[in-house]
Image 1: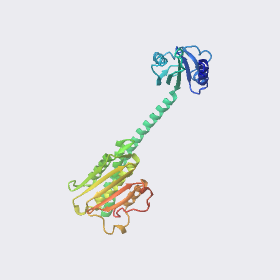
Image 2: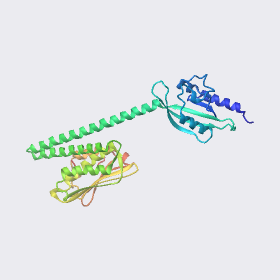
Image 3: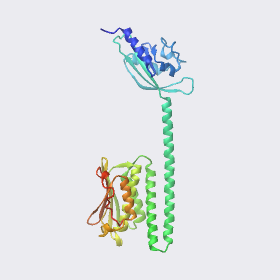
Length: 353
């Protein structure tokens, strides 16, 4: 048995009136048939006088917007629907309110009686909050970038002081330790500069490693025809905090190669590699130098070993060392197995430091 049109209209009015969201039911002439209490309250409209009046005449005329009128006419004729249409409502009570409107024609099976259901969402406060959040994030990014610049500059000053001290001391051993400290501070300063240049977000590792190795090579390789430092990496990216740890690992392993793999000024090559597949990745540093010493397993771990072990542990990665015949390959790999591997196992050459 078909439902009478008046019953359908009455049910529709009851649903609209009980809605907690601002809803308005309009007829084909854009006259208000009914509206939710939330609509009247949100826009300060008298609920008793609104029915029978055109939407465009409500309030102080703030709803009399030509484009809104045209859109609602198109909805009533079935030619269009309003989907997330935004408009500013000048209420005369402060700044305009930003509204998001949705409207659609209701089909009661009777084309002689047209109805339009209009929903109104006031997003003014949400937009203001979003803008404040964006402004705060932008301000935070600027402050962080300034802090990174100052840290990098301070590290370079510290490195210069250490280098000057190294030149003044008479002890060869002390000079060696100070020079080693200078190189490490400079590598950290280089890392800081790379991250400052990349700003925030994802870091492109190939370019990052190349710039880092260029910095290390400039400070530690005297003859680039005699000793070559190259980077072969895929198009991987990583978060900034992860790239810091990767960069420090590369720095320690490359410094280890430069100090121990090519004694007596012999020719050689160091290659930094990185590749990833899904969540798993492998970082490697290979050289074609003299290889690992025979007593490496019994030697006391150096500072470089401890640093690489600690950083690999933070990344849930495992360190492996292989004889390359000639030279050595050190790899740091993150896999599902590495995440549960024995945390105490480490094969890093003990000569590192």
